[in-house]
Image (cartoon, rainbow, N blue to C red; front, side, top):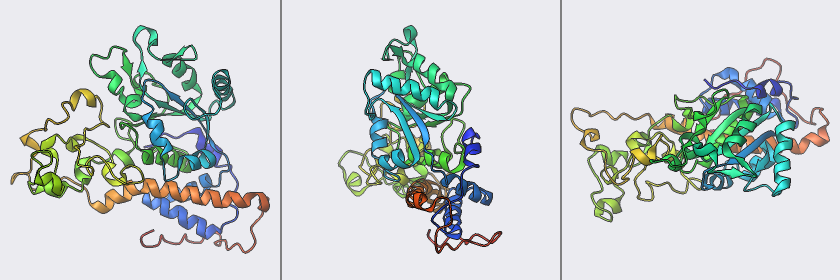
Length: 390
């Protein structure tokens, strides 16, 4: 279950929706609740959360990283990074995208740590070096270790974005000269959500934040702290090339006929059978493509220690996983279930952005009163069922 946060208590005191009929508003909330496979009593909680005009304070640290997770965030589309910053979150500190620099940037950080204490979400990108006191990553005279120790106590939750922040990633690969570790190795007293990937998929990052804003709690996670909506199934079970695997049709050499025909890449080193992620469902760059669609095997970049356990990347995982008469059953999940879980990320994000923006435009003129022509549902009336295909 997701860990309850103080955000929920704040949201419960927020005003009722303005500028949209109660029936229409609750109908949309019921669609989102059903799409996320949550029980029906969450509908009212969604409604309360989306009535908020407040933005969630976010402090974003970059440590041992390539800035790939930031680049991914800036390419969010459901909602966009701009919509996230303007509608949902108050990005009070981020070295790469913030306007202030130098002393002014540090002043912004320390002001936020005090002003928003107990309210902000801490996003960590990159691993944290621990060798020799953490000297291998310093910002403004502080080590990454010191920054983390300073910011964690005032956070309501920590989001470890990317494989480096989640598990240590490439910096932690053998022989790990900097003593790089992931957030979970250091933070033990705060809720942590791991969003691994090299880099994090922006859809999953946006959906996690929208889930927090909507429900006031973090999404349900697996034993590794990964959200189940994004990491609940193997890539192997949702891959569009799975039928080729089951049928024994494999690429044997780069550029061969099977490669040109889009056959299974398992014999070329694909690690999809051990990788948990929704890559095949949400894709990248607004679902334009993803590695396997581009003809490259999955390297299981979302898994712990992937650099040490998945290399050489083009070495296959062996005969034991190949289909045989003794294993005729596909170990997948119904496609409709997968699309319901994975597609909810984009649906929830885009729907929330549009709805909140529409209502906020009318808040100033309404002054808390009912909008003219409003058709509220009678007290205690049934929420309309979600329309087919919504």
